[in-house]
Image (cartoon, rainbow, N blue to C red; front, side, top):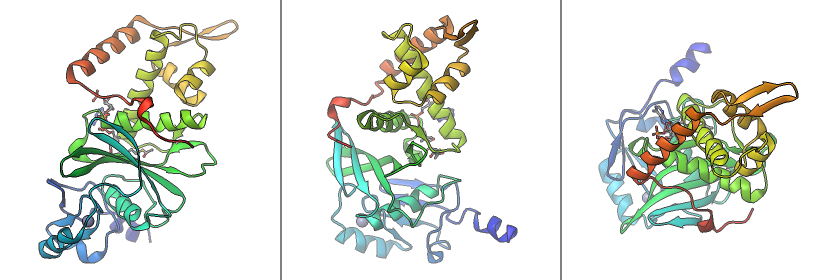
Length: 283
Ligand code: ACO
Ligand code: ZN
């Protein structure tokens, strides 16, 4: 059985078309077998339905009326929107989203049991519609206090700051819920890099902009992060110093300079941030 499991994990789709992008998948995803022998799999960028041939796909496109993810638009800032989608109400869309996401996620296991999850889809909007950029899923009830189950930026949009927006949004939801959140473990390599970058920037930002002398608990509440993630971040930045009475947080010159450099790069590149006043959402 070990071998069978290994075989089933081999990447089974060569190329997908999604909107105006052709994308090479990274990993196996359990699409129907009839699709796996095609040179190109067509995916409708709005309903995420999948088609083996161009004729079937074009006939679908003529019928499909969706121009944005189903569900409620809970955030809009310029051309960026977030939609909240209930896995129970939008079963087909959420299953299609999980199938698509699995092409880029190695360790994800949810494909059919989408009921217990909410999906937060981020789109970039133009005159044709709201184009999916990325999403994260979140358990409706997480016993472990996770605020994200799976998170993805589609490959054509990666490394442009969208992952950070998704992460910031997930913490904004936790803040509204008056909870301290953390992503589901294990994180992928890219997930860890992105979360570390977000945590470091957030903690440094708090210490530099007003939270001088803050404790771990203060920082955790201000950022809606768990104390564990705060401590790990401080340790990683070499900002926790042992003293007789325990630990103190020391804002180092290196961290301050790194933070200022980062902010300058973001300003020059015109990177976006989440504006909490634009979130229309209650837990
Ligand atoms: N190499 C080095 N650093 C990286 C990389 C990379 N490939 N990707 C992200 N980072 C770090 C950088 O510090 C980056 O900041 P910078 O670009 O200013 O240097 C920071 O993370 C944020 O990058 P973003 O552009 O905001 O993130 P992106 O939109 O690329 O999305 C994500 C990150 C969601 C993890 C994306 O890489 C992805 O979808 N990967 C595949 C799926 C995956 O692994 N998801 C996480 C699984 S864990 C979980 O789901 C809980
Ligand atoms: Zn469609």
